[in-house]
Length: 205
Image 1: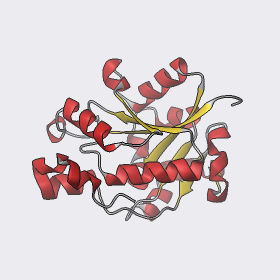
Image 2: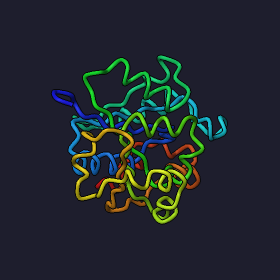
Image 3: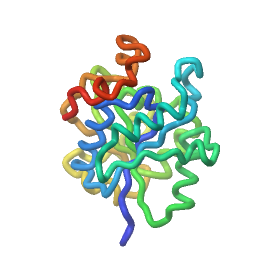
Image 4: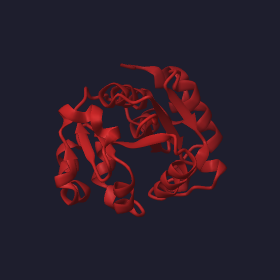
């Protein structure tokens, strides 16, 4: 860990990126004391229908326009190197960026279905994981298969600033102020207008 930059990885479709993504990123920067957060915009999501995704170039461009913060970077590494699964991206980044110590970031909604991800146990063994609270998934997430399997490796939230230094498997559940926006809600209520900049910036904390 000595001399390494600590990086939080937030992966997803960002369909579209919105103020909720910014909110959890800023909370993670503060609570985990990270140097940076990298948004990994996925070309596809193996657990979602391709027809539900907006064009990749639009999602990437929109995310970059929204993430206007000096410590948040938006990367297209998955598209550039044809990385199809989260485990592929983690292997690639750990191999090519040995100067960095990574923490995987996810909302409580993703933790509930984390056991459906390809090689989810290897992900847990490769890097620490921070789960950020999101209504109404908290209770269900904490009873999910991952949380049960790695219950003895849970770090107290009061010690969250140490997570990036911990050897995997290690994880932490962070209770944070909840943000009301979700990409699903924006698509359902706004349709194509979900990618309008002013809608995405609403209610940034």
